[in-house]
Amino acid sequence: MPEHALPVVAVLATGGTIAGAQADATSAGYKAGSFSVNALLAAVPQLTGIAEIRAEQVANVGSQNMTHDVWRALAERVDALCQDPSVAGIVITHGTDTLEETAYFLSLVIQHDKPVVLVGAMRPATALGAEGPANLYNAVALARHPDARGRGPLVVMNDDVHYAREIQKIASAGLCAFTSPNRGRAGVMHGGMPCFYSLNTTTHTTQSEFSLALLDKAGWPRVDIVYAYANLQADLIDFLAGVAEGIVLAGVGDGNATDLAIDALSQAVADGVAVVRASRTGSGFVARDVELDDASLGFIAARDLNPQKARILLMLGLSLTRDPASLQAIFDRY
Ligand code: SIN
Image 1 (spheres, rainbow, N blue to C red):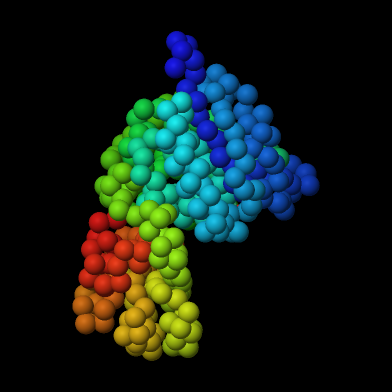
Image 2 (tube, helix red, strand yellow):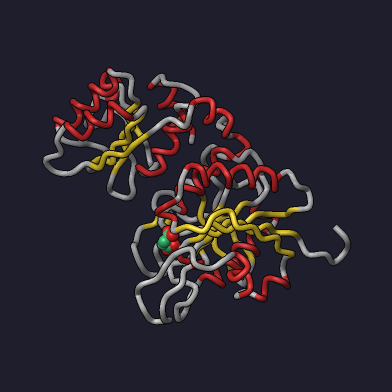
C-alpha cells in the first residue's frame, strides 16, 4: 500500500431495511431492499476519510427472503476477497431478520482471518433518525481495523459488536433489537474505534472443518425446525421425518416437548433423521440427559445455540457425518 493510502474495504450489499424506503419519512410501512449499495454509501460521505470502498451488489432482498443460493454467492465472494491482498476487510449489508443466520453460516465456511463485518439497520434509509449510515460507518471502521482479525465474522449494530455465533435478534422493532444473550457482546464501537471485551470462545473460521465444497457434495442437507407448544401433536414431525435429513426441535424450556412429539422425534431418529434439541426461550443452555435420556433416544443437545443457528450447524454437520455421537461432538465444539 502506498504511504498515506487508505485501506481498501469491500462492501457487499444484500438489501434489508438499511436499504429500505418509505413513502414518507414518518410512515411505518416501507419496502426493504429498495436502495442500491451506491446510494447507501452516498449517505455516508465520511467513509471517504477512513477507507477506499469497493462496492458490489450481491442481492437486494428483504432478509426474510435470504436463500442458500445467496449464502453460496456471498461465501464465494468473501472467500475471493479474503485472498486479495489489496483488500483489508469486508462489510456485508444485510436485513436484520436473518442477519444472525448469515453471519453464523459464514463463520463456519469462511476459512480466513480477515475481518468480515455484517451490518443492518432497524429503521429504513428514508426514516427520521435512520441509524443505517452510523452503523455502516462503524462497520467499515471495524472491517479496516487489525483488532477485528481472527474473530470470525462480526456484526455491528447500534454501536455494539457481536460474534456471529452469539448474536440474536430479540425484538421486532426498536434500535436495541440485538443482543448476545448467553456469552455477551464482543465489544463496542466508540468514535469509530473498536474496543473488544472478550475473545470468541468457540470454533469458527480458520479452525472450522466445514466448507462449501463439502456442503455441495452432501447436497446441502435439508434441516427443518419444529416449534414446540402445549398440545403439540406428532403429525407435523412425522411429515418432516419423511422430507428432511435433520430436524431441530425449538423446544419448550430446556429443549422439551409433549410425549407425543418426543416419541415421533425418536421414531425419526430410528428412521435415520438427525434430531437436535434446542430451546425456544431465547437464551440458556440445553444439556444432554437432563429431562430426557438423549443417549437412548439418539438426540443431540444444542447447548446454547439457538434453533435457527442449530439448523445451520446441523446442515453443515450432516455434510461430515450422520453419527449422533459425532454430531453431538460437533455441537460441543462450535
Ligand atoms: C429484513 O430483514 O430485510 C427486514 C428487516 C430489517 O432489515 O430490519
